[in-house]
Length: 587
Image (tube, rainbow, N blue to C red; front, side, top):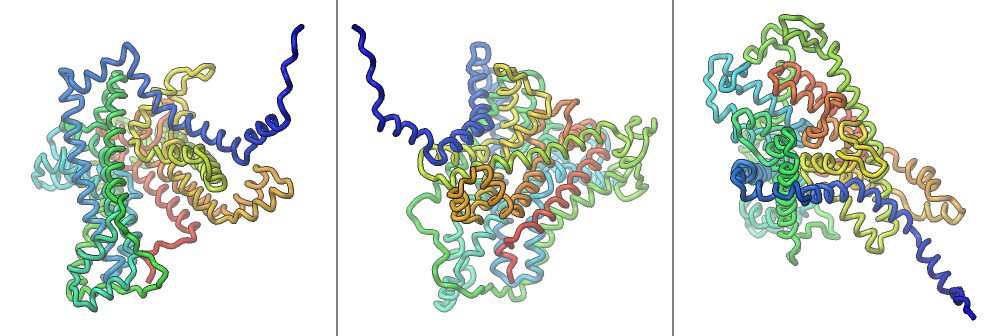
C-alpha cells in the first residue's frame, strides 16, 4: 500500500516564506536584473562573440598576427603615450590652479575657480575643431586654418598628430583634475600649516612636506581618471590624428567596426577596457595601504592662505592664460568659423548662411544652413529626445539602485549592486558602444535587433551614465531621513507610495540637478554614440564629426556651438538647483 509523503512542517514553510519576503529582497533582485541587462550582459556578450569558432581567430590576428603591429601594438603605444602624458600634465595644471585658488591670495581667485570648472563642459571634439580652425595647414588639402591663411607657415607636427591631440585632451581634462584636487585641498586643516610656519618651515617645505603628502589620494585619483579619459577619447585623435594616419586603440576600434571587421573590433574593445581598468585599479591600490591621509579632525581651523607677495600678479597671468586657452579661445574660434566663408579668414566677410541660409549652389555644394537643413533639424530633435529620455531613465534606475543599497545594506546582493553600478567608469565609451552592438545587434529571443533604433541609444546612454545617476541618487537618499519612510510603512503605505509621496518630493531639486547633468553629458558625448549612429537615427555630436570629416567645417562648428549653448544653459540651471556650494569658492 502506497504511503503519502509527509506534509512539510509548519516552521519550514514559514521559514521559506520569511526568506522570500525578506525586506528589500524583491527590490534587490529587480535592480540587479536591470543592471545585468544594462551592463553585465553587453560586456559578456562582447567577450562571447569573440569566442565563436568563426571569430576566435581575431584574437591571434590582433595580438600576434601579421597585421598585429598596425592593428594593436602601434595604436597601443600611441594610446599609452597620450594617457600618461595627459594624466601627468593634467595633475600639474589642475593642481597648480587648485593650490592657487584654495591656498593662496591670488587675485580674482573665485573667478579662476569658476573658470577652471568650465573646460570639462566643453566637448573634446569642440576643442579639436577649434584647434583645426587655428592651426590646420595644407598637408591634407581643403581649407587651411586662420594662422596659415595669414601667411604663417604651420609645421605638420603642430597641425596634426600627437602634439595637437595631447594639447586638446589636456585642455579638456585638467578641469577634472582641478575639481578633485581643489576639493581635497579645501579639507586640509590650516592648523597643520600654521604649526609648520611657527616651526620655521618655508612655503616650499610646507608644500612638499605637508600639503602634497596629505592630498596624495586626490592626486592619484585625478591622474587615474584623466588617464582613463584620455586613452578612451575618440574625438581628438580622430579629428587630429586620423588624417595623418595616427591611430589609437579607440580610433582603431572604430575603424574595424566601420569596415565590418567586428570581431577584431570587439577584441580591441576588450583590451581597451582591460587597460583602463588596470590603471584605475593601480591608482586605487596605491592609496589603499595603511598610511593615513586624514585631514579633517574634530577641531576647526581658520582658513589661512599663503601670501604670494610680488608673485601674485605673475601667477594670476599664468592662470588666466591657461583658462583663456581652454575656454574663451575655443568658443570664439568655433563661433567665428560658423560665420566665416573660410577658416583662412575667420574674422572677415561673415555670413549667416550656415545658420539660416537656404540651399545655394555656389555655397557648400548646395547644403542649406542649420535652420533649413532637415538632417540637422532631425538630429537636434533626436538629440534632445535622447537627452530627456536618458536623464529620466538614468535618474529613475539610479534612484532605485541607491535606495536599495542605502536602506537594505546587508547581503551580497547589495554589494553586487554597488559594484556593478559603478562598472561603466572602467569602460571607455566607444568600447561600451561596441558592446551594445554585440549584445543588441541581433535578435534576443522574441526581442528584435535594436541596432539603428532610438531604443538602443537610450539604453546604452542609461547604462553608460549609471555611475553618475547612482551617485546623485545616493546624495538624494541621504537627504531624506529613514524615519519618515518607516512611519509611512507602518501605516501600510506601499514602496511606490512612499517613494512618490515622500522621497521624490523632498529631494526633487537634487533629482532635477542630477538629471540635467546627465542630459548635458549625453548630448555632448561622441565616443559612446559614434558606433550607434545611423542615418535614420542621427545625433548632433556625430553629425558634427561627420561634417568635419567631409570638409564642411562651418556646419560642424555651427552644430558644436549649438551643443555648447544647450550644455551651458542646462549646466547653469543645474548649478542653480544645487544647494551645496563648492568649498574652494568660499571666502
